[in-house]
Image (cartoon, rainbow, N blue to C red; front, side, top):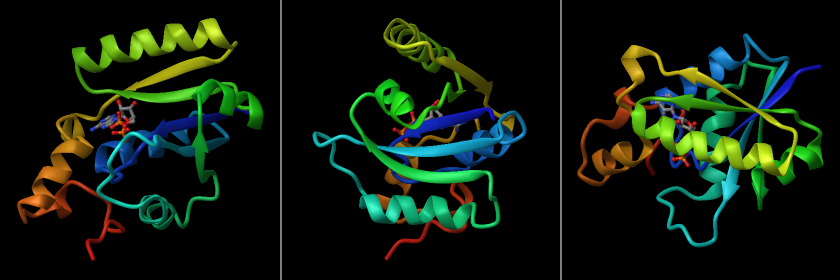
Length: 151
Ligand code: ADP
């Protein structure tokens, strides 16, 4: 069984993430969306809210799981026996950043990173932009799955 994890902070999940995850399930038997906990980061949404947004977005997708993890992504992959890391690429900046991480991960463990190129209509979306739109009371609903709701 081929399983991949899709790691990130998903603060909040966007239609860009959604697109990569949906396309990921056409390649893998299971895609595990893994929310990484970073104690140094200030998040807009709590861990529970971020998890719930993703679970709700994929409620009808038995091949998609959502988990929370701490520490190195490769250590978590080893712990749960996953051999692939799924990542999305939007632009050259993503490529340079992702290349360094993927090479480092390959040094640390025999885990392959698989990249999917963003879809044209979601390539400009980033969680940081969504947070800015939310902060300034803009219409964020075009950028995120319907499950993302502001209290
Ligand atoms: P975080 O959730 O920590 O902000 P990222 O936004 O970097 O993490 O997202 C995690 C993964 O999702 C990365 O591989 C990133 O390239 C990918 N991703 C983010 N936004 C998009 C998008 N609009 N299209 C495709 N991939 C994306």
